[in-house]
Image 1 (cartoon, rainbow, N blue to C red):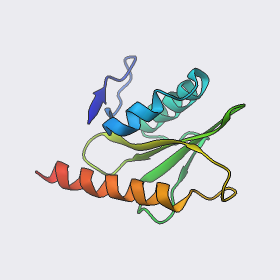
Image 2: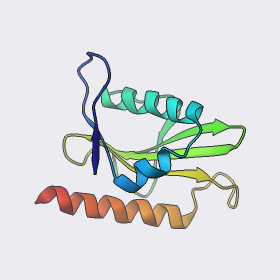
Image 3: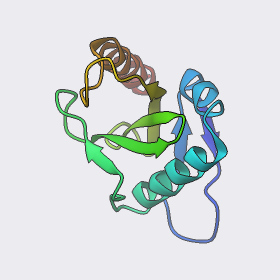
Image 4: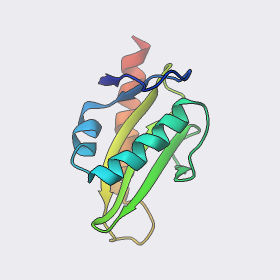
Length: 123
């Protein structure tokens, strides 16, 4: 788990990353990283960015940020209702194998990380 400081002087919630999600995120094109960081900052300020939408089937407070790029579509998934921080659970490049749907393996990975994080933060 990695905490990144919020930029600026606004009153925001901390943004924290599952280590594997941060590693994958750092492989994204710079323009995509910038767009997703803006959306995460908006979430940390208590609002929802236009490129964020609730993820169905993962419970309330789990959102997906989608950013397009000439190299493909990129996603970051964050949870609002786990601890005091905005937690980024997963970051991945969307492959067009199932149209617009997020592949089941990605959903299962997100669900697994969310469960482990909740248990870890209960301690």
